[in-house]
Amino acid sequence: MPESTLSYAACEAAMQRCQFAFVPAEAQGIAVGLLASGQSDPAAMWQAELYADLAAEDLLAQECRALLDAVYATTSQQIGDPGITLLLFLPVAAPELMVAALRDWAQGFLFGFGLAGAVEASLSDDGRELLQHVYEVAQLDTSRIAQDESVQEGLMQIEEFLRVAALSLYTERQAATC
Image (cartoon, rainbow, N blue to C red):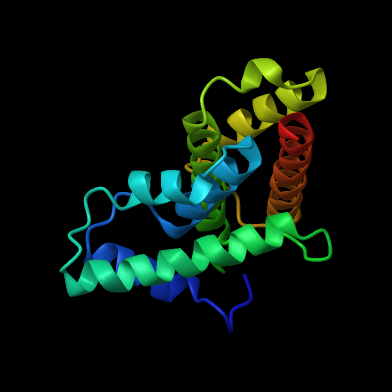
């Protein structure tokens, strides 16, 4: 997500103010998982799942919904347009916080992908393997992160893997639902 379009910090602050159950990276992961699953109406499922506990008349909830709607719209546009690169919505942060954000994103993706039902069985062997690797990212241990250059490079590789895995699964499911 371009910083000028949507600020991770602003989204995170709004979510904290309304005591939202997810962090922004996880919320976008849910959106990407739903979109990649081939679900016929991922936007409705997104709203039902994420906004169930938000009171419509609450101003903090309205602010949170508006920001999350922007995350969903941007994500939907990015994943659906081959001319645009899917950007993971992650904070600019220290390595241990980035590991947590990547883990949260992967957990969100798996949650969103799973909301569509039992699509894993319909995946190719490569698709199931990608899903397994996303699961492994979702299990990352944030307590054992060193502060060196190799960690930064590793984090960039994990981010790129998640992006490519999500796009590959999206492409596979789109072909299967057409």
